[in-house]
Image (cartoon, rainbow, N blue to C red; front, side, top):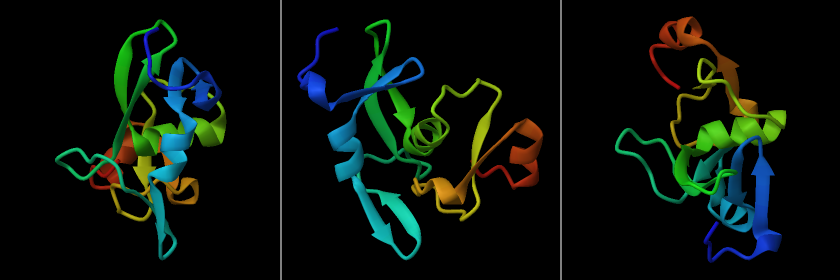
Length: 111
């Protein structure tokens, strides 16, 4: 895996490797939301680049990474991370819940 990230900053959660320092430095507390201050998807969701344990680079949405860190595991493709606060760039695990496609639809499509 070719990377400019020092090994002591790399953290693994499931099959995803991310830069912990970057993860922590790109968050800002606004009210009770913990907002991602890094890159945003056009729909307002934060994303961060990292690597699969296979060595392939990839991007992941920050709210999904926040739940993976909170739960200490990968999320299944059928598991959706739903914002309870309706703020798409919030990464506060207290504002997130894991659901399925049905719960996503009941939540007006917000993930």
